[in-house]
Length: 119
Image 1 (cartoon, rainbow, N blue to C red):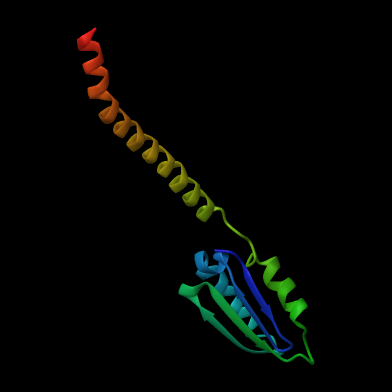
Image 2 (image 1 turned 90 degrees about the vertical axis):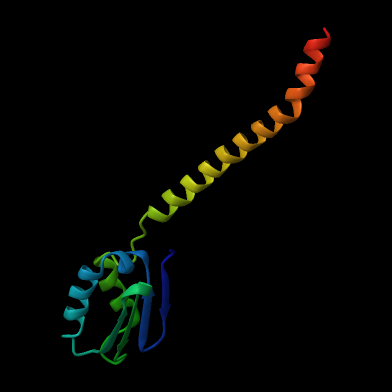
């Protein structure tokens, strides 16, 4: 999952792998953010890995809020997906090579055995 950030004048929405995989740490920061007067509401969609924060733009701006969540790791990307993707690619290549070799042996096998028996 790639990190997604959407900023408007009064709202910040972040979707990231960190938010998805670390719900307890995210919940702890959300509790702290809800104590800030400038924060009007926080919506955490745990299974989507998403948090939307509505704030008063007279007291806080989106960049300041973004720096805060970034300092808590919300924008960090983890390499689990890349690891799985690479493993699938590698396994697929091995499987395709194996199937191709079996097909070649089956196709060439009788021809080679006939050629050897005539010799």
